[in-house]
Image (cartoon, rainbow, N blue to C red; front, side, top):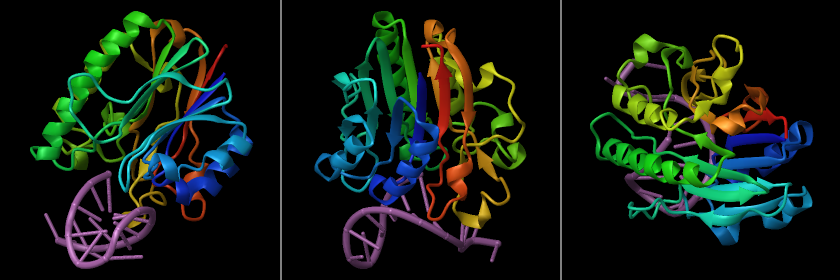
Length: 256
DNA sequence: ATGGTGGCAGAGCCA
C-alpha cells in the first residue's frame, strides 16, 4: 500500500499536475490539503476517471481537505475536532479498509504571539485529544498532511534564521511532540534520509532554486502501522514543474 | 532588499 500527502494550494489549478504525478507515483490513497474549493466545486468526475473514490471537506477560498482512495470509498467521516467550534475545514478523518486515515491542514499561525498563533496551539491541543480517542479505537492509524511545524532543526534550511519563528518555535514543536507522545511516529525519520530534505519552499526569493525550505508535511503512523512501513520520502519533482504548488508530495510505502 | 510570489477574487487576506 502506498499513501501520499500533498498540499496542492488550489486543487482546481493543480489538477493537471496531480494527474501527471499520480500517473507515475500510483498511490493507493492521497490526502490533499488547501484544495481551496467548496464541495460542489470539487472535481469529482475527473478524479473518478483516475480511479479514485473521494471524501471532501471543502471551503470557499481558503483551506479545505480531501481524501482520494483506490481502496474503496472512504467511510465513517469526521470533519470537526470535538470541543473546537471552528468553521475552517482543516480535518478529514475516514476509514479505508481497516486503515484509519486522518488528513490534516494544521493552521499556519502567521507570527508568534498573534491571534492566529493562539488558534494554532488551541487547534493542536484539540487534535491531540481527538487522536488519543482515535488511537484507542483504531490499531492501524495514519495522520498525514501539512502540519505547519518543522519538527527539528535538521528540517530547516537555515535553523539560525528560523530560530523561534513561526513554524519552528518551541510551543509549536511541543504541540507536535505531544502527538509523537501518543505513540505516533514520523515515518520519514524511520529511514536514512539525505540532509537538506524539505517539503515546502516559499514562492518568494527563489526558495526552491536555493533549496531554502522546511519539512512541514509529515506522515505519522500508529505503532502497528509504523511496523509495516517500508519507506517514506519526499518527491520534490512536481515543485520544479510549471505553475507548481509551493509544497511537494510526501509518500510512504507499507507492507500491506 | 521589512521585500519577494501565488491563489482567490476582484481589494485585501492568507500563506
